Image 1: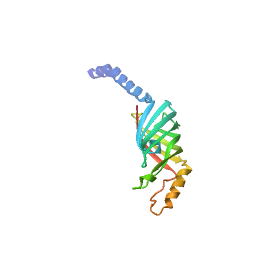
Image 2: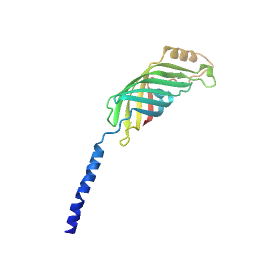
Image 3: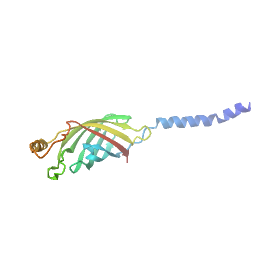
Image 4: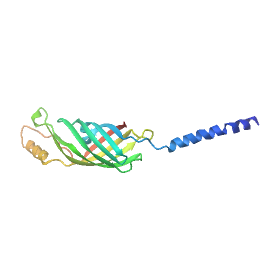
Length: 180
């Protein structure tokens, strides 16, 4: 009998604890209006940082800057987030800034960055417990200026310069972001 009285007297406390846990699980993730990412890709200026501002969840404006082999690269643009409240959030983006570089070892007079528009698609992988911390993976299609092609072709004709690699037509981007 004492056991039954004890169980019934603690029942309200047990139910209240379960209700608090259920409410915590239903609570939507906090929203962050800005975040800072560290990563690789022309949307980060090469190897660098990207700062995003989100006036509304589906829309983000960003600026990125970093080391781009031949100097300081930068990019600014806009991102449309297709499923902004989901763990996996696909996006499309457009940007303008650094999208090609020429670097010749021991010949800095040929080093140059080239600027133009680029388009990208990708996905954000948000942390389940901290929505402001997420990984971003993207593919970028740069629209390189004609000057880049002309300069690269001119370098190929120089017998004292050997071309080891050319930039790919589609680039990648990866970064880790933290909510601000």
